[in-house]
Amino acid sequence: MTLHRSIAVTATLFCAAVIHAANLPTVVFVSGEDEYHSAETLPVFARFLETNYALKTVYLERKKPDSIEGLDALERADLLVVFARRMTLPEEQLKTFQRYFESGKPVVGIRTASHAFQNWLVFDKQVLGGNYQNHYGNNLAPKVQVDPAARAHPLLRGVPETFMSAGSLYRNTPLQANTTLLLTGTIPDHTEPVAWTHDYKGARAFYTSLGHPDDFKDAAFRTLLVNAIHWALNKSVPGGK
Image (cartoon, rainbow, N blue to C red; front, side):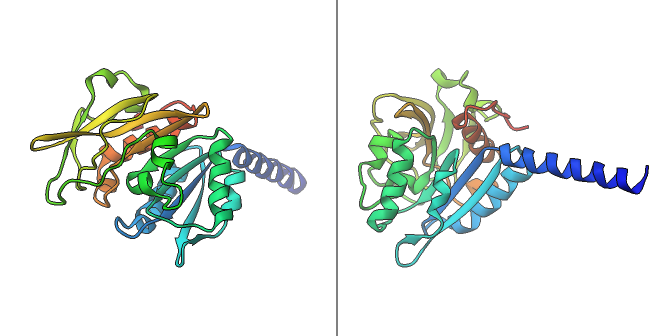
């Protein structure tokens, strides 16, 4: 192969790679809480996602005082993943989030996302379909189970029938209308929903109250989250592959 030919082939391959990357769905991760160390778990998970699946990721983080830089990324996002807690954002930043949801784009909420916006408290019920009412004791690790009616749901492909969570069990009963229960969590004398889907503005929403740092170490939780992201994007669910 001549030098000119070699350069042409390299340039062609480079251009193809750039075009391929440009066409990949973009997942924007927003970390905004201190209690469960999402600033540590989310970037690692985002890299894992980008390395192993055909997705691009953008990571944004809440700073003190309540503010998130780079929210213009939501304009280019195909999916938003929220792991934040009780943020009182400036009005314009909150409106950026609201415009995203009103546009009919999908969302994945993790644990404290149910109470992510202190100046938009209806977000939990309205967008995620939840009903957060605090949690049970931190010393009670819930047993997570697939809801029998949801066994055939594609989002649960590769997720074990039962597994344990390291975090406290959130009170979320009853869920809102237009939700599909996927997983429940059980401690002595109490069972609560811990993962479900919801429809908002025609877009897919998924929420799980799991998300303790040790949950991210569990293959069952990682499979659930990877599946949820693909499902929300209306892509084929990997199911642990």
